[in-house]
Length: 365
Image (cartoon, rainbow, N blue to C red; front, side):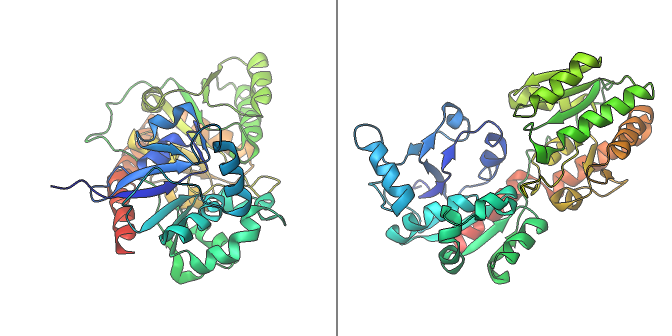
């Protein structure tokens, strides 16, 4: 039996820690195509996404010049892969814009996955950016825009993407055959980048309110980012706050399995940056960990209030604190939400099913 043909996957910067999990899962169910990644920057962690990763333009002495010409003028350097399937899958809106000349030169149909902030952030659309310059051509020539939530599809449509090119396909998660055995919860859990859109300042205010009411349940924060000083300041003044930095996937899943709740208090940032569907939500559901999330965008699409999790108004620290206290003091509710979330992840957010659907789309083109 012959090997599946390679399909080109473009991500301009491959291997960012916050992206490894959800980008890898988009291709778990591929059996008829073999993903081959290519981008201008390849970070050391890229091997965790795939063993088939290539840097556009190769190394010295010509590599830097080739990458510069590709970025600014769309001049495509020689590629290390041959006999490609006739479709290219680009990650993020800017990645689609950068990959457009690549698809044109090779005669490939182009599919772009839109994740959220890539289309909501205002700076991405400023005059002169590669996305702003090439978006009209991308809208005309892309075969499909795969959106991780309906909220992302609405933003893309507002920027002119036609409805018949928009497909909503959330990225799934690997779901164990059975929910993890119930453990005594040890803390609330936050996992993600410490940036404005993740609701870090709302989280710090909510923790302060919890302590003021006598709730001492610990909070573990996994990740890193520019707002780390705000969490560090809170940890110095408030007992029970742990900052772990980035952790490997197995360690994150272990934290989820023993958490009171996963906290996703996201907001729309001042620069317009907004969530699509945060990957930590299906990850937590797969571990039967109840989720407390903001009532907006793809978060509200994934959480059915009172059934698979709890929703609170974005930016409302009092409501977030009340939801955290509720799950910490009501074990029956916590277990019910966790098991319902697991059941939903197993059917509606299963990575192998969602990935197979993506592969079928690429093959259909």
